Image 1 (tube, rainbow, N blue to C red):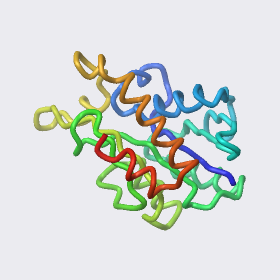
Image 2: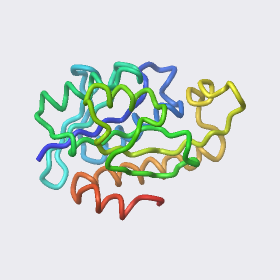
Image 3: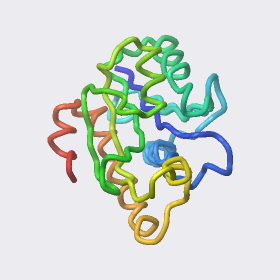
Length: 187
């Protein structure tokens, strides 16, 4: 069985520590956990490894957020991975900081990365894991906020939350989405 875990984010050093790039951070933690180094590949950086007998591909697209669907579609087709074995890890403004929400399907909720994936896959029915970044910004400052760096208490708690999200993704790979949702949602 093959799985594709995609952490959404934007390429470039200026984005590395931003809220919008938390998907990349989770992808990096998963790759570290299964000892799978990232290598430059088509549409981004790809790590390839095994987890409990299952082949896992971890992708950090280099397409920028609003074109993430191109990378996802390419790797699903290239490796012949069914969409139900895909997990998209993304930030979510509508959830309090650090909140974990795994779902089997859903709307793009205004997220440009999810919108691109939905357009390319022609479905909303793909697993996703949303990382709450909260919405602590004033009117008209959303872009500055999501592209802003973690601060204070967020920065302190971030490593533990990234670890939790990494474990949730690996639970999805090993135990399936229903079991992973039961074990991790709201944790």
